[in-house]
Image (cartoon, rainbow, N blue to C red; front, side, top):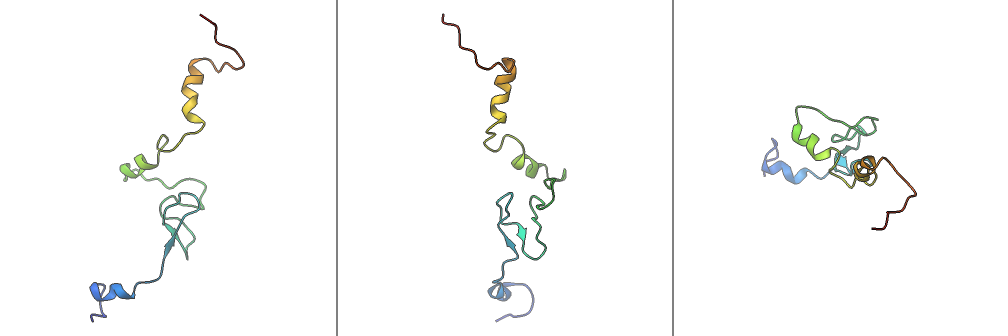
Amino acid sequence: MGKIGKGTGSFGKRHNKTHTLCPRCGKRSFHNQKKVCSSCGYPAAKTRKYNWSVKAIRRKTTGTGRMRHLRHMSRRFKNGFREGTQAVKA
């Protein structure tokens, strides 16, 4: 059976979840007892980020999501944030 140690025989006894879904990042990294997300650091105001994991920063950075507001800003900046005008007919 192999009840001692942490090998194959012990895996059948593992049925408690330590981490559940995080309200902020949506990953299964929210620790039930600590009430802290191991991925984004929720409920802390600042998102958890370390320079020793460059690839993790790249996954979470600006531009990996929808950018519902920010994606239009470069075009609006180029045109001087004009509003309420019509294009001149050629």
